[in-house]
Image (cartoon, rainbow, N blue to C red; front, side, top):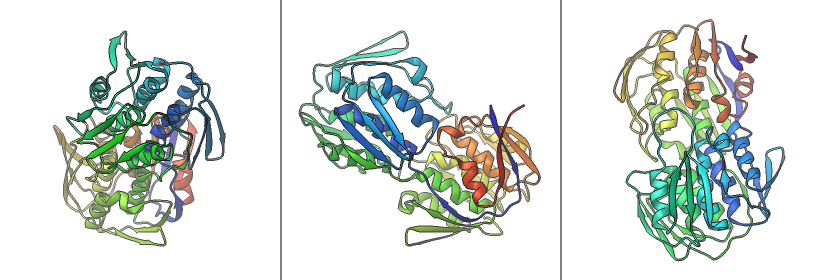
Length: 418
């Protein structure tokens, strides 16, 4: 098992390029199940979750080839309708294959999902939507078994905004008979990227990026070629890295308009952010100001940036209050940040963070993907040496982050534990 060893106190500077979005790439890969033929996907990040998705697709009968950051998926031979526990347990997005398998083969058997331990993320909204579209669903021995001759359009109102549920029912509805209307749909940029892919395949989708999406089902789809959007959470993590080290970095291949809520908070904290010729420059301040944060569905402040901003607030001037309104168990990084000398008190879904003058290097343990990033950020700002273990979480969502940070001047290296 690997760990990261960080010698803090280095001011980051230079240029860094953001990889393609993991959260956009996963449903795009899965959309290839809807149409036989060869699909070509560019700007693919090489991550554990991508590899898991490839294994799932290959198990279902697809042939996958990679060349650099380009992946070709041949779904001509899809003949298996089961996604097993061994694969699905490590990545909850695997459940998204259910809708496309129903559309393509008329049946699906998919294990209940796993993923990061950041709180309950049930798939009941997915299943409720598929049932409304005519699927017959049974839960047996930890698997969801679904059947449908052909899904039919339906009006579906989500009880709560769900990114995965919105993506799943978009995939399922693309070839359903009639019109499907998704109300209270999630509005994330990744959903817009998926809608663009589906429309390239011949689907008829309107309203992606708003809370009402209309899908007019078509009889069949065809293969696509698409470049995955930049990873807005990786970009945001580098922005906070510049801020917490008082650095000056230029970020390439990012969409600043996807991060408005984060940008406003960083600017309130005293961080200078400029955008010229699609290159974003981020300059940290000698004194970071405290800001309050409430996570919300997009376009609100992203829950996936909460841990990173908490790391920044540990060295801010004053006290900040951070409220987590998306997941009920997303403060597991708090106890590890305290090991750096951070002053944090939690009560329910709220954390009060009092800034300290300096963090002190410590051995810490990652508990989930974004917690991993927050501990790295704290290590970059801390005195002396820090060690971050259990970074297999990190490898699910950040492509070679230690190499990118080292390219900006960080003293960071990956080593084998023990």
